[in-house]
Amino acid sequence: MVAAVLALLLLAPGPGPSPGTVDRETGEPVNLGLAAGTNTLGRVADPLAFLRVHEGPQGADLTGDGDLEDWVTFVFDARTGQLHGLGELQGVDLSAELVALVADEALGGADLNGDGDRGDSVLHVFRPGVDAAAVNVGLAVRDPGVFGTRVVFAVDEQAQGGSDLNGDGDALDFVLHLLDGRSGTVTNLGVAVDPDLRPREGAPVRIPGGRIAFAVDEAAQDADLDGDGDRADQVLHVLDPARGELLSIGVAILGAHAQALAPWASEGGPDSSRAPAGPLVFAVPEGGARDLNRDGDALDDVLHHLGPDGPRNLGLALAPVQHPLSPPGRVGEVASRPGYLTFLVGEAEQGATDLNGDGDADDVVRFVHHLEDGVNRPLPGGGPDPRQAFAGERYLFDPPLAYDARARVVTTMPLAGRTIGARGALAAFLVPETTVDLNGDGDVSPGEQVAFLYDARLRRWTATGLAHAGFAALGEAELALAVPEWRQGGVDLDGNGTVSDDVLHLVDLATGLARNLRVPTSFATTQGRHVLAVCGGTFDLPEYLLVRDGGRGSSDRIRRASTPAWPWERDGDLMLYQVHEQLVGRDLNGDGDQADRVMHAWRFGGAGPAAAAR
Image (cartoon, rainbow, N blue to C red; front, side):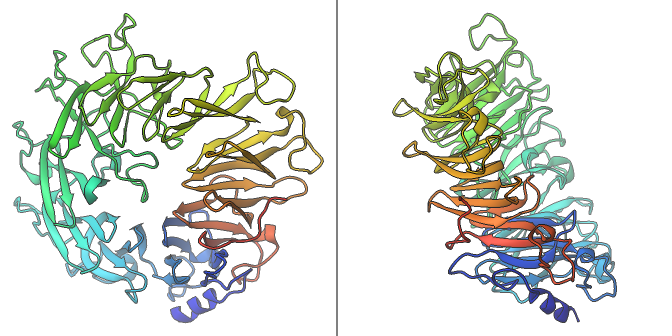
């Protein structure tokens, strides 16, 4: 019955290709035929995606148990266009090779790990194109993480039949294991971890060399792993999955205010599947026992860097501040880039030392640590809020100054404004008009902010001549701007007869030339080489999602992809998004109504739908 229901679902009528299939020649969107509930979950790791839908909005019993009360997981493989139904398994994490899931024994009424009860969450893995169904690993787990073809997970000793898996004489721990997804081999790493740690607190994160860093819980391991005489710390370890080697770094990493692990790169964070693995930075708590930054006390969280020869004490206390790294590239407490690290240091925490030479000792100062020479250098003339700096791959921008990786001032900018973002040697700024008409609309208005590009290597400004409103986003190839018609000289930029719209423009980073896409927009963002924008929404144009590939120069249109507030999940060239049936006037999931939001997938590998620009 389940197979019959899924077959009907996958053959439900819809626009373009049949649901569950993909036209790889044109890269058309795929109607997955699944109605999205308010809590529909989706994750993407190109070319795979999983989503979890409720039977209620489908109007179909997908599990064959006679009700419409279940949550069901599907995996979409963009390489083949196949949609795989995996029943009530819950997707947890995935890579481009495999999906990790857990099964709630209570839902299926079966003992899946052989411990004699039916109350555990048991690990399964699924490799589309290899496995006909999800494979039961047979271990009760918490929050598995996928790293390429391998899965790192903690096994609950109590839930695994009361087994002592780390040899400490009890069965109360969560013990780290490694699964090789290709061979199916499971290795017990023999160390206990805190299963509730988030990535920035010591949960497994990727670091250079294909390795994985994480924290081992001394209390659970019943051992003093850092040699400080207690068993109360979280101690840094590094795993080489390819070799199966586990190395203790021998330092505790959790402090009251500090980020524990910060492998931040130019885009994304430690849990971003495509973020490059940056150098590992972590804070070691002095804990009242050691003065690691030589300021006369032992109360600080002191920054360290994990280099090829082991941990290196940077000798500076991390400032107790919180600032999110959003948008991508914004430097919060700690960030790492190729060749250098940058972080915030509190003068009060550094022994009440005046670090920036302004005569007091109550500031937060941004430092740069050059990885080659190992020297810490404060930015000599940073802006009033050091948390607002942006770091490119080679230069750090803190208007009105730009610095190189050794904190040397490259140039003082003749124009200063709010930084949009930085990539490599290039940064994008919004500069307010003060005494000069910067966008050529015939007036000078302090309320107008005009976009500029600045190349720190060439020390060259490029004026876009475009005012800004609402959003500005810097991608790999283009700068996306919403340009308000009324601030751009009252010109009808989208040709709809009004001058009240914000119109999407794209500025080519290589040439500085701007292109008007002639469509109103309410939101846009950049992800890699792509620009994704919510467009339309005016009296004559329904709202839709526009995706532009900056590497190919094509604008693609999808009608109405949910609401303007982040209507997609995306990785690489693959996107999951929702289409409102009511707005397209069609039944997209074959349930006889036009009231659903139906899940679609789109891989940008082909030419895509017709361009949206008019």
